[in-house]
Image (tube, helix red, strand yellow):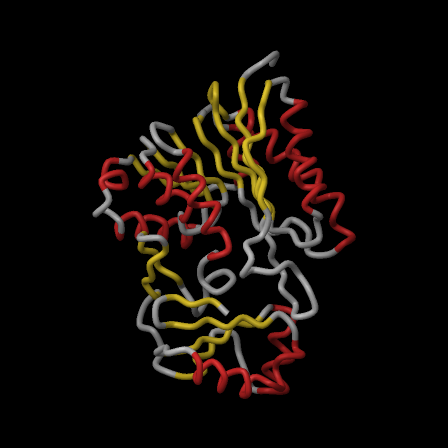
Length: 288
């Protein structure tokens, strides 16, 4: 369950909850004051939910249908969340602590936010004092949302002064071909392993992705690398990032590692499918 202002978004990842949905709904209505609740369903249960329970993804369980994306506040920053059709429940609330870390790292830096979605990391970086921010995503819809999120926060002097650019492209291809370099790069791709059999391929992809990111870093640059692949253990992900750093020939120091926040548990019996782990590393050029 995610809350966006007065809108609740309930996402179910397993069909086991469907027979008890009315009970769950009553409990939330009893405990939490809200205008509406939207049901989001994982793709693997959508057909079953429709056939057996007449439930669909994006259905409003109570309250009125929102006319537009819901506007909410996170640590003073305003964002929009497309609770009806957006990824997950419309925004990635589980990354809020990491967004705050990026804000601290951003002053005076040029920033690339790859797989940017609606620009959450970018607005934080701008508020923190980044001189420019580039949002890179393959989705035009996501980049349009990122522009609107920047517009929502022009009251912050840092956001108003920050140059904001959007690039629609495949991140792997763009990083490989672009000559651009940045002082701070955020790499937080969607899940690269949906099942255990894809784990090894995902680890190779994480190492390649971070190697491409490191090559785009300026001297004394910072790489923020994230994973939301529940099938990839944290230690393996961290080691993939460290391997990319070592193979780059650049000297580096690791500033911080973190895992999923306490209110966003790792995958378990209730079917949570996303868990974020983030390695933050400062990289300096050595022998290239």
